[in-house]
Image (cartoon, rainbow, N blue to C red; front, side):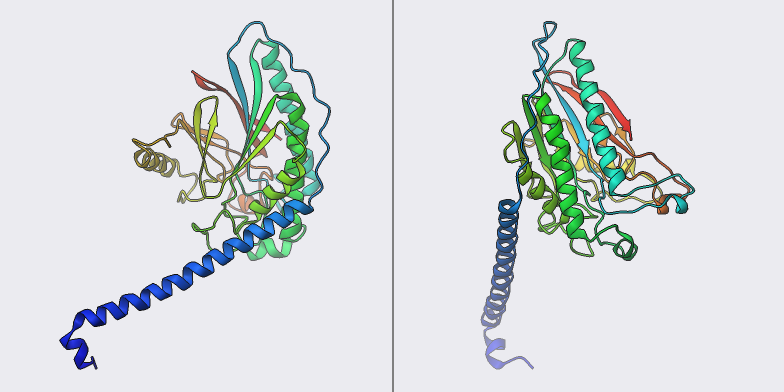
Amino acid sequence: MPKIADIVNPERAQLAHFKAKNKQLERELKKLLEDRGKHAEMFADLHRAIPALEPYPRIPIMPTKDSKTKVAAVVKASDWQIGEVIRAEETEGFGKFNFALAEKRVFQLGQKLLDWTDMHRRAGFNIPELHVFSEADLVSGNIHYELEVTNEFPAPIAAEKAGYLMAEFVARLAPHFTKVVVWEISADNHGRFTRKNQAKQGALNNWSRIAHVFANGRLEKHKNVFPVLGEGTKLLADVMGKKFLLSHGHHIMGQMGIPYYGMSRDKAREATKRMNTNKKFDYISIGHWHVPAIVEGNILVNGNLPGTTEFDHMQGRSGPPSQVSFMVHPVHGLFDWTAWKL
């Protein structure tokens, strides 16, 4: 039963309601800030505890006479899913994966990138910079029960190994470039700590974030390597004046295959949102969908490191392990898109 005073003065009841709601929101905000502080403190402790890699000897960059215009090399590194085990016996040989194979494939990718860059330099291109788009799902994680019980090692160890592997990958490339920028997206689906995907703190409450912190600590002595650790689900990267909107890509809904229409709608929404701002983009770059592709000319989709999984095999799908690289010209934009089969 409502109180007589509330009937006479409904404003008083409304005021009491808003005061109670305000106190509830204050409690939630306080907890959110406390959690964020704990994450920041943990990442700082991790960073201090990680032994830094000694840089490899610098390699003189071949001088070019044909072109004074600088272009940049870009490699997309995502969906490594370190910790996952794929048994050839369960895929009829279509897929096989473990950490030893992950290392082999990542180092193979690094050597292919160096040979590819050298080929372009010999053709006259001036390539002082490398940009690494680290677009998450670096760790297999515990998002499904079957992963929890079949992963090669627990998620914290997987994050450590993924970070060390990323650092070694970048360290081997760094001597061949004047500048290396590592753009790091951590919000993803495989690395999340929670059962459902997060928007709030999705990049913080995540094993890919831990892997990036490990990698950055290992690369601390590399004075030509510049990590950019994203705080949210999206990150705007600048490569030779061209803007790339990075995300993992798990926010794009789809069913019955790869959602090309969903990617198109996502691009349209982002373009509309960013009109008349300084956050416009030329390209969208994502991972998650495991199949290298250029959609509508400027949506760039990466492959994955494990290749065909048992689930892919059950569904009649198959695809080789792959990662993507390309060049960026300050005027003409993207060229020489290459999907490396590993």
